[in-house]
Image (cartoon, rainbow, N blue to C red):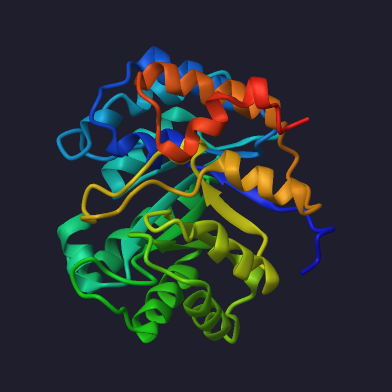
Length: 305
C-alpha cells in the first residue's frame, strides 16, 4: 500500500445521496449545499440527475440546480443521464461530464431502467456518442457488481460484458457499484483481480454502500491493489430506490479522515467538509445516522486538526 498516492474522491451526495431522501429539499437549499461542497477542495461533484421527475421527484429541479450553482475552476461538475431526453436537458446546463448507468444483473436492470441489459446498450451508446460529440466526457456506472437484491450472486462474465460495451462506446471511466452494500474484502480482491486482467485500474472507480459497515474495509482492500478513485457521499447519505435493503454510501467525511490519517492526500479540507456536512444536515432536519454523531460533535472533539 503506497500511502504517498493522491486519492481522488468523487462526491455523489447531491445526486445519489438525495435521491433516496423522503423529505423534499428545496432547490435553493440544494444549490447552497453544492456551493459549500465547492469550497472543500473536492475536484469532482455529481450535482443531480436528469431522470424523469415521476421516478425521482427529489431531483425534478435538475436544470434549475445545475444553472443555479456557482461553479469553481478546477472542479468537474457532473450529472446522471438515463437517455437522450435527459442528455438534451443536461446539455443546457453546461456540465463538464455526464454519467450513464446500467446493472450487471438482469432483474435489477429491469427494475431500475425498465429494460433488459441488451435493450439498454443501444440507448446508452446513443447517449455516449452524442455527449462526446458535444465535447462532454462520459462516465459509466455499473450497478450490482458484487451482488443483486433479486438474483444474489452476479456473474463476472456479465460484469465484463457490460464494461466492455461501455468502454467500446467511449466512457472514460467505469464506477463499479456495490449497490446493496454486501461486498467483503475477500470478494473485492477476487473481483478486482479478475477485472485488472482486462482493464487498467486507472479506468475503474469503486462505489461502495455501507449497509453492513464494510465500505471502509472494502476500500482498504482496493487501496492495497492500487485503486485510487472512490465515490462517496457526505454524511453517508444515499441508497437506491430500486434496491431493497440498500443503505447509504460510504461517508465522504469518514473516508477522508481515514485516508489523511494513513498519510494519503486528497486535496480536501476537513473543516470545510464539516461545514458542508452541517449545512445539509440542517436542511434534512434529522441526524443522518448514528455513526454520524461524531461529525456533529466534531467542533468540540475536533479530530480534524
